[in-house]
Length: 130
Image 1: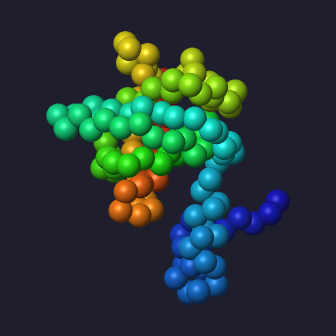
Image 2: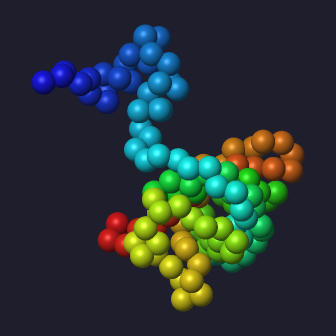
C-alpha cells in the first residue's frame, strides 16, 4: 500500500517550498473538464437580478466555467439557461436542481478578472441530494 501524505503534510510541503501551490491545487480536481462552444444566460437569484449572456469555456460533471461582461459575487446563486448548447453526456441533467422554468441552479465559487470588461466565472451546479 502506497503511503499517501495527508492534506496537512501536503500543505506543509507547500509552505516549506518543496511543492508549488499549483501542484497542490491540481490534486483537488476530481472531474474531467470538456471544452464546449456556446452561450449561457445567467440571472442572479437575489434582489440585484444581475442578468447577462456569457460564452461557455468548459463544463465538468459538477460545474461550468464561462466568460461574461458582468461579474456576480462569489457565493451568489445563479439560474443558468443553456439555449443553443448540447451539454456533454458527463453532466447528468436528471441529477441537477432546476427551477420551474427549467433553468439549472448553481453557486458561484470563483470569479477571475480577465480585463476591465470580461470575467471568468466558475459555477458549481446544485445536485439533488447534496
